[in-house]
Length: 157
Image (cartoon, one colour):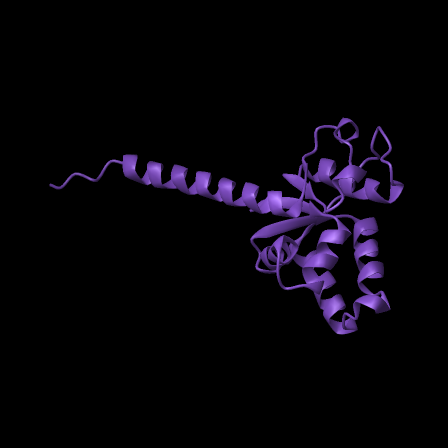
């Protein structure tokens, strides 16, 4: 299963609208197709932002979703980043991406994560992530099909 980190803006957009790349990523997390990496700071930000009255999310649904993340996700204890980011509130997301060895950090704000400060972490837009995910799945399926074709059949006799 692919391990990723999701910036809060992607989570909120995915929960607000049932359409688009962000919604598809949230569905994939909910379906168990993706594992979310997080730490206490990220979980706290998710909790605080999702409870803002302007979004209108139901308390019980927020609690259930956050419990799901804790239960199905991967909690990590990251180290601080070497180079600070333009927005210090984004640093936990990069730190968790690096510590968990996540495939990538999915965000709608790539400019907040300059490549030269990300220590090799892949930071990707939601739409680009879906393309990447589908390509990874297709490559894995090709390898699986190839390995089943090359297995020798048992001899009769």
